[in-house]
Image (cartoon, rainbow, N blue to C red):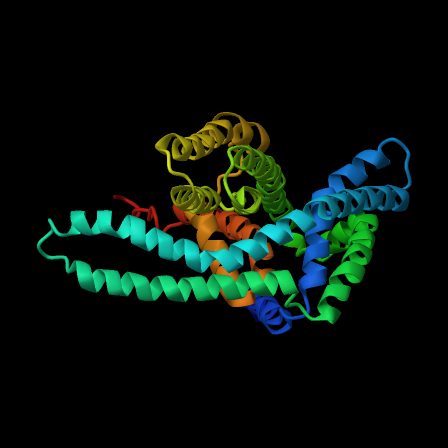
Amino acid sequence: MKTESSTDYQYWRFWLFAVLGFIGALWLLSGMLMPFVLALAIAYLLNPLVSRMCTFGVPRWLGALIVLLLFITIITTATILLAPIVQTQVVELANSLPGYIETLQKELWPRIKDVLEHIPTVDATKLQDTFSQYTNDIVKFVGKVLGQVVTGSMALLDILALLVLTPVVAFYLMRDWPKILGTVDGYLPVRHAPAIRHELQNIDTMIAGFIRGQAMVSLVLAIFYSITLSLAGLKYGMVIGLISGFLSFIPIVGTLTGIIASLIMAFVQFDQASQIGVIALIFLIAQILDGYFLTPKLVGDRVGLHPVWIIFAVLAGGKLLGLVGVILAVPFAGTIAILIRLMLRQYRRSRYFSPIPPSGV
């Protein structure tokens, strides 16, 4: 006869193996999952619009088709308008980067060397050699990456899969979203189903709040950076602005990337300190706009994901699963954060946190 403790042990062992099996399948199939993961992300982002259309009597299949076509039209239009400009700037930047780095070393290093000479424990000559070596390696790496982006390093089959499979899969996911959720709900363990539904709702609220809100923040910052940096006369301002804005999806990373790249480019390009100050002022205004308006209004306080946790999740996801891991990183981070909080609540209620004193004490 099985005891309750042995039943619980088998229950948790089953779910542990199920989770490990799911993670293992993701790792093994990561090379072919890109269209499906991207379609899932698109469906998740656009599903509220489809549900809203259904409340007005629009059939779900028609609502999914309209929303998807509108999304594709916006993305295609933006690509047609921006792609030629971005491609030209990326090619020029890749070709000019070694010269800019050399100019930066000649003009900036003497000033740094003057400061380092007053520090007895620092060997300025050795540090310069090390800096030059790593700089050359970085230049070669960045040039190689930019060249691959421009020339299209992805195989033709992968591109066709993204362009054809992704919208088709996204359409079916949006059309059948309620059925999919109903099917998943039907397989929840009966004894724990209410608690699991409650936690899944918390996870959905967190992920939706962060992804949809932060995506809007990144889009607004990308537009702001690219326009203002270009108007300020910064060379390759549009490319730097777009990259900084979209990297703002990861807290801190986008801002640091943008301000370092922009100030380096401004230092090489401009002669007057006031022009460099304008570039710094653009990022200061962006941070004020983000901190006091965009993030509070679009993301809010309900997300509860620490920036360090998001950065770690994105880097770990990229290391383990590549681009698929980067896309899945934030949902996984949000899910794990919710589960950790749940386990901590259970721990605080358990006898391990507050043992029951013996009777008579």
